[in-house]
Image (cartoon, rainbow over all chains, first blue to last red; front, top):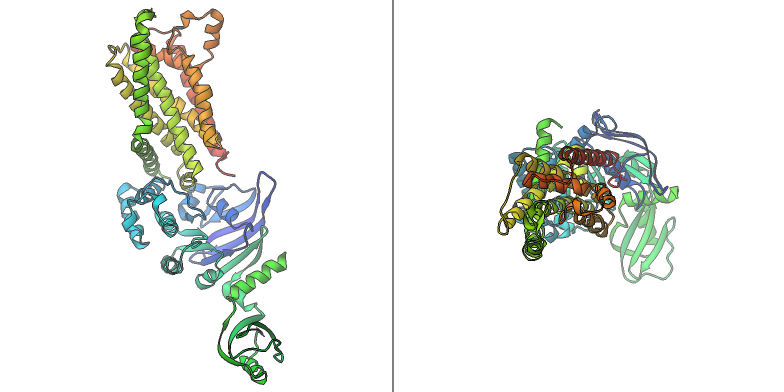
Length: 305
Length: 257
């Protein structure tokens, strides 16, 4: 197994005394699609900032593939592409010039830089906007341009800090496709996001961080198997009574035609339908209340609080 | 990074800088031409004709080297301070900080960008001055060397200002309250022979005195200070500013938390 990113006991204390990271350790395998999740202020962006050298660490060790950042940071930086949370372009530069300049900072010759910029502008649907100054691009276009910029030197490790925040659903899906494609072609991806269904749909492994500490670090499947219950929403035929009693289930009336029911893990849904029959409630359709990862996330973070 | 890759990174930063100031030429190149034309008209033609000789030359010839140097100082300084602070302000400096570009390449890219603007403006102002007076070149080597050293020195100082600046106010304080007074008191418009011994000695603490006088020597062959000493002082200030810039970049002060 080749490790793309190894973090050992990483600590960060800001100048104002805020202890943002309190001994974070995690490993990401080469080729992985990894989610780093946590509430606001948990330490995600601080961790990313240290990996890509925008922040200095207080202590600990960070290794990117074979490069220890304390020994050979330039080599580590060559391996990394980073998509920050906020737009950080020169607003007056044209989209293509931004990419070509970024390629230059990695030492790519001008001809290759132009070819790469054309490749990623086309792949991310920005070719028509290549001569627009970045301030005239929409929020979604800026996000895509940041991804193109991070890919310009074709890094082995791509780190995305909330890449789909504020992006419409259609564009989000197309970015997912792009990220899956580059992951399948060998790029290791680390993703932070507040859209937990995004992490569940894309990522194979996950770490949950809160208050500067890693609460959970496992595979997505193993994490979801820890869920003890699932909540279903039932759309009912006819008007529901004010008080509802379903034998053996926790049920809550949402409105006159909607019912929310908790089902413990391993319990057969047939028993639920039997209870519904007994209560003379007819169901026209049912769905999960929220995605499973969200339930797990909330329970972990609340448990740690 | 290999030397070849470092060269590519350096050229990228330098060309980006040149593209930036030529794109906004009306803000960066034109004002010096207009301001200096006014200086030439007012101090040279109108008032200068009543002043008579200064340092053995007519007043217009005497002030031209100082005015060219003033344009180099303000332009090389303001190019780097506004460009680098601007990239800090909009966070586009992060594009460079996350890349493997070595710190000295970043510094040289910005500094040579400032030097190129200083030299370009010097050429414009020199061209304008030729409408008002005859141009003398006493020692071309001294002229070129002082132009390059001065532009480099004030680009470096601009870089230091940009790193420390927290707002756009901070990047105008030094030019307004430090650079302009030092330039005006640096012997651009007068010979230091006119000062009393005390004020003449005080003036020698002003680095602009050496810059202006060394350049005047290159053009007219006269100087209020010794040329080797002036070169030595400018070189010393340049090395000190470069060393301090590298310290700031390597320590990440004001750039990396």
